[in-house]
Length: 80
Image (cartoon, one colour):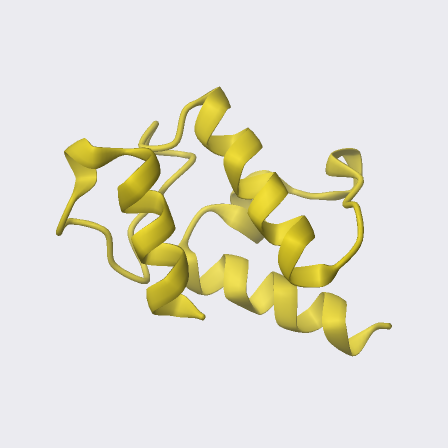
């Protein structure tokens, strides 16, 4: 899932092509703008098969890196 997400992020932000790695700050660094965040939200919702309440998410803690996003998805799956 890590590589799939990295490919998606690079597709959303071509300027990051070849630069995205699992621990790269995405939100706190400004690498993902508001449109990128919306795309990320939709991607996560598709992976989970249900909507996410963004107000229940700490964006920096839960979604700032590829590793954190994958961990968030895995935890959400486990809690179902």
